[in-house]
Every structure is written in structure tokens, then in C-alpha cells.
Length: 358
Ligand code: AMP
Ligand code: TRP
Image (cartoon, rainbow, N blue to C red):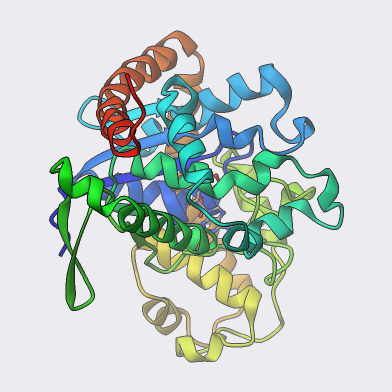
């Protein structure tokens, strides 16, 4: 058990097309964690600009998507008064700590990041420096609040391991200074206890939908950037669109098995059952035992009804919130002020630890 106070942090990029994978893999967990912990949820606009401007849509696109992600947080049930919701660039301490982490992290560590390889594609020479350094900014996002728990989808696991490596190297490199200033905190790591300034953050990757796949290809992740809109259910889709996308989702011709084991090697079937399970708060096993031996012509309409029941109210509430951008901006401003106060305390310590005179 860490002796850092439990603090949840997570972020979502404002790059348009928020989808069911974002909701089930991340946002829904953000909502659940509010009951037990202090939570900080961030719209990571500095991360969005690491990709090509066509992806994030320039200034107009960024403003719109930042408000849309904020609206999705609130429509899903995040309470911005009890917790903190803000956009990353409002708190410049994220970028400041990221620079320091650029000097802690090693090239070799970042060279292993699979997300960089995927996003940069073949033309690596033309990727932004920011895309390469993306994970050090992500570590700074979490650690500037000394965040202990980070709910994310499965694709972010490697980045969170890197955040732990950075925290550990920082704690080791500056251990004497941290002790001299009395800034160390005891924490349990495995069977031993170590002392450090930054916690070794725990990923929270659990449930039946940590990796929601494309509706058109069960081997590809559902993603904001897939050119086919049929590949994903957007959080803003209306009921008819949701039902149509599920009807058109790729499947095999077998009926549903009676045990979850029978979904192995059937990626499309596994994905639809996983989505059903997550939306209904059931296990995959419970879902297949309910639909054992049934054809997709029976399962898909049931899934569509469930998805509409759970998602349509969120879409409606998002539309209502988006109609009043001033209200959203006020939430972000208030959250940014509260986040900034915490982040500045951390940075003041970090500057002292490094010997930066003020
Ligand atoms: P992003 O859209 O990349 O900012 O992702 C925001 C959050 O959604 C992160 O926690 C991701 O891990 C999660 N996420 C994105 N795509 C998926 C997916 N297909 N399945 C599950 N989680 C996802
Ligand atoms: N990299 C995350 C994603 O693409 C977004 C993110 C940025 C994040 N900073 C974070 C997630 C800090 C968790 C914690 O999904």
C-alpha cells in the first residue's frame, strides 16, 4: 500500500469522435472512481497537437473537441465541483515538469513505445518531436499531482510503465536531496519499502471492455481516426445510427457459444459480447449463458437496445451542454485554477530538489 494519499488522474485527448471504446475503457471508470477518491480528469490539449494538424483540426477543431470531451465527462456523470475537470494547457506546470522528465527519461525507453511506432507509421522522420516525447508529458500530467491511480484502456499500459520508470529514476537520482529537504514519502513496492518524492502510479485497467475493437474488424482497435464511421459508435450518435452500426457490425456465422471460452479465435463475436457485458455490468460468461446457441440476428437487436438505453441519454445531455459553451468554459477555468494550485506546490518542490534558484 502506498502511503501517498490516493489520488486518481486520467486524461482524454480532444481529437474528435469520442467513441464507445473511450467510454467503456476510460470515462465510465472515471465516473465510478469518484465515489472513493479525489479525482482529476484532464482534457489533454497539449497531447492532441502532437499529431498532424489535420487530425486535431486547428484552433476551431481544438476548441470544439475540448468542449466536447468536457461535455462527455459531465454528461457521463463526472462531478466537476467535487472533483477537478480542466484542460491541460491551462496549467503550464505540466509542460514544465515534462521538460524535466525529458531529461530523466532515456532515449532507449522512448524508442520502445509501440504507440509512437504506430502513430508515426513508416515516415518516422516526419513525426513531430512532441509525438516522440508524448509519454514524458503523460508522466508529468499524472505526477505533477503525485497521482497514485490512473484509469485507462489497455493501450495505455506501456505508457504507465514508463511513468513508473521515470518516477523511480527521479527518486533514485535525487534521493539525497529529497531526504535533505525532508520531501520523501514511504511507499511499499512489492515486499520492500522505498522512499521517494513521486509515487509509482498504479494503472487501473479492468473490466470486460479494456480494449474495444472496431465493429468492422475484430483485430483492430476501435479508434477516433478510423476512416470508416461504421467502425465505431460515437458518443454523439443518435439511436438510429447506433442500431444501424450494430446491425452492420461484422460477425461470423456461428451461433453464440455457451461459455466465454468459446469466443476465443472469434474476435468479432468476442468484441460484441464484451461490449454487451460492459454495458450491462455483467461478465462475458453471464452474457453467453443468457444467449447460448442464439444467432446474431437475435443478439444484435438486444445489444442495440442496450446500447441505445445506456448511450442515448449521454448523447442528449452532451448536446444540451454543447449548446452553452460559456458554461463549459467556466467549468474548465475553475478546474484549472484548483489544479494549478496543486501543480505549483509540486513544481516548487521539484525546483528545490533540482537546485533551481528562485
Ligand atoms: P484517447 O482517445 O487516445 O485520448 O483515449 C482516451 C482513453 O480511452 C484512454 O484511457 C484510452 O486507453 C481509452 N481508449 C481509447 N480507445 C479505446 C478502445 N478501443 N478500447 C478501450 N479503451 C480505449
Ligand atoms: N495518452 C492518453 C491516451 O491517448 C491520454 C493521456 C494523456 C493520459 N495524459 C494522461 C491518460 C495521463 C492517463 C493519464 O489515451
